[in-house]
Structures are given as C-alpha cells and as structure tokens.
Image (tube, rainbow, N blue to C red; front, side):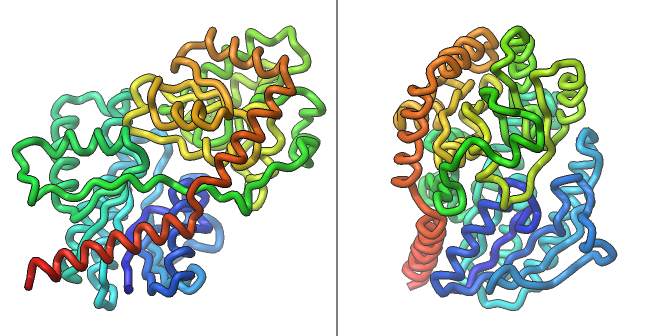
Length: 419
C-alpha cells in the first residue's frame, strides 16, 4: 500500500509523538509499504527550529526508506498559548497544502493529533486523494487543556468541542490509546449521528520498545554526571507541562529533606522547567536535568530506582502517559499518581510493577515512595515483573501492522460500498 501520514513530529525531533510515529513509519516501510510523511522541521526541544534546519520554509528528504516533507512549524514561546495556537494553525495550513500536492495515488491517510487541526487537514487531504482517513488521537483535545485551566473561555471551549465532534465524524476511523479514550471519543460522537455515519473507534495502544530500552546496572554515567552517587533516585522523566502534578515532587523533596539517602530527579523540558529549576536551586535533594538524546533514554531510565508518573486529577480519561511503558521495559518500578481505573493504573496493577495512589495527593505519594525506598527487594521484584509485561506487550512492528490492516479494511469497505 501507499500511505500518507500527517504528523506534527518525526525524528530527529525529540517529541514523544515523534518517537511513536517514527517507529510506526519504520514498521510500515519494513513490511514493504510505501510511506510519505508530512511533518514539521525539528523544533520541540527548545521551541525553536534546531541548528542545521533553518533557512527554508520547506525541506524534503527521507526517514529511512520513507519520503518526508518537513515544514516550518512557526515555533513560539512555550507559555504563550495564543502564539502556540497560531503556530499550529500555520503548520496545519502548510501541511494541508503539502499533503494535497503530494503525488498519489494513496491508499490511506493517517493524521495525528494533537494538534486537533491536523484532523481537518487529514480530511481535506484524504478527499483530495480519494482514500480513507484514520485519525490517530494521542491526547484528547480540548479535554486536557480545559482540565489544566489552559482554556477557560466558555465560548472558546464550545468552539473546540464543536470542532472536535466534526473532526471525529469526518474520519473513517479514529484510533485511541486506551479503552478510556475510546469511551471518551464515542460519547462525543453523540446519539444524533447514525451508526452508518459514525467512524470506527479502535483502540491501538502505543508499543513498548524492549530492544532499545533494556534493564541495565543502576550505576550509570548519568548518575556520575549529575552527582547522584549511590542515593536512591526517585525520578520523573518526561514532559514538564501543566498536565503533570510536578509540585508533588517538590513536596516530597521537602518532606524527605532529612533523608540523605533519597534524591528526586526531574528529567525533561517544558513550560514548568524554569519553576522546577528554581525549586531545585534551594533544595539539595531535588535535581532538574534537561532532555537527553534519544540514545541515552535507556541509561536515564536505568539510573532511577523508582519512577513517578504523576497525572493531574481528571486526566486519566483523556491522556495516557506512554512513558510508563518505557519504564516497565527498563525494569524499574512505577508509582502512578493517577485516576483510579485509568489505563496506566490498570497496567501497573496488572503487571505487578508498582503502586497506584490517588492523583494530587502528596501524602499518599510520599508514603508510597517510602514503602519502595525502604524495600529494595520488592523494588527488584516489581521491576522484573514490569519487564516481563513489557516483553509480552505489542512491538512497534505489530502496531504498524495493525494500522496497515485497518486501512486495508477501510479500503475494502469502500470498494464493497461502491459495488
């Protein structure tokens, strides 16, 4: 098959979405499919176009055997929501034009969200090439933005709710990461839409990369570089945004100020990075480290003794922190501060790979940290259990095959309808 993918990020961009889609593209091309990707120039790490990529609005090249059109993303300051929204609109306009100009024919289009506007781009591009559209939802927008208070205007919220419903209905299939997100999307399609007009809503979870992420010795170069020594490292590694309850780590560090054997490490970047660096400046047991290159991810994860996944209350039904899977692949236990019954909570319990505590509850988090810090044997058993779970989970190639099968199914349905 020939497939066209619209995605906001692709390697070497360091965004988590870019890692996921890059691996899926590799799996599709490895299975013999032809893939063309429309994406942005690398910009995620510093919210500016990276060195070596500047000077041109459009660049064409390759990702493995896939062809790629990279576009200017109109990057802006991380905290300026209006500028970021305008940047997404600009990127969406370019992506739409590039997708429609791409040389067909294509058997299917996959559009990745966020941004939500890529759904409209995918619909126009799919209509242009007369093929099915699969809308891949990594995070449900605007739910996350509303929950964290980034969007408060009732008028703007109504607009995005309308846009979200229309976008889902324009797709031939909507893929989500969990049953929670599937229920969320299905509810928004409404009863006024007939079954024949509703898109298929499919759960296609993100994969676990057990090849590049493996359990290794905790005594790493990363520990030496950042002065962590032999202390018990409690780490959060990922995006430092408003969705994550990162103030819990500051509270835990304050509580354990009299325990020299514990150090809290925050590894990543985002809108909360400066706040956390300021907090670390006055605390000897809190360390903030910037994003690390992709090739060091396994080492970073192995450097911790316990990993935290703190997601704010109410976000479990609209977001799946896929970093959890990487932690399990690294053979380290997880403390998930997250809504009860959410996908990550179920995985951690099912795998026996850690503890689940209520979200935004500092006391519960601190108690869970102490429970694992003081029981290294139990940590080891949980880490081993998590690795076993990860090895049994789906690989990048399997997820890629699922998307190929879904598009083939949609193509067959269209052919049957025409006949």
